[in-house]
Image (tube, rainbow, N blue to C red; front, side, top):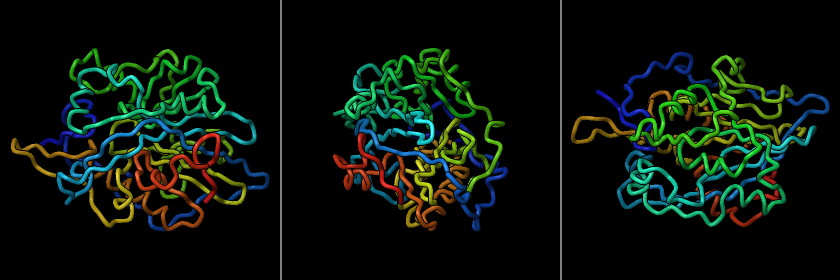
Length: 325
């Protein structure tokens, strides 16, 4: 039996029962790294980057066809306080929706209305950061609602997770059916490998200490799609953290265990899920959910509509800063 990822499919079919390897045992007892003297940290600001319909039937087991929420496609500004180095994590949706290739438009017909009142580059500019001044863009993964418009960042190096090179090389238009669009400037892209994720941090067995000072970690986030990475960032000198979870889950109730990942068999016998490797994704969701029990940790998903409704237009968005937990 094969599994077809409903959410922005990439390579067609992938097998169910993908080997869990080191993710088989979800960490129960862990601690986050303690702050050191003169501990480095980052400031994180949310960026408006479009709104998308999220039919919960595709994401939450037991949801009905009428349950649809308007969720953000969040991007983030990250400033490394010791050096002033500026990173952008994800780019959300591009303003010119019509520029997306046909496979993406086919997905949008299923998911419905997409609006972009303000793109990531416009949000940065409004917050005092010209897009052409951005030196580094880290993408959680290559789905269309996270890659924005790379052309708006002509001087940036793009950083993507393990397996992303293969997805880009086989993307649209090389494969006219692929919803992975070859819009990322390969000549300015750093393709991380699995060997870069050589350490563990908290409940996550594979991570990369980006600056080497324990401030932001890139976390390998398997299950959703190849190359999916999250960010675990220290947001104060005294032990506050934020976890930027990308598409690890589409509903916070999946993190708390109140709900389960949607999964069903269609009329042709194919299994449908928003994640390419469901079992692996669930293990990672449980790891992310374990952070909810840790003091001074803020967990924020890319499409967290509840957080967005409480915070839109407020101080958590650039030029403001998401306050330390």
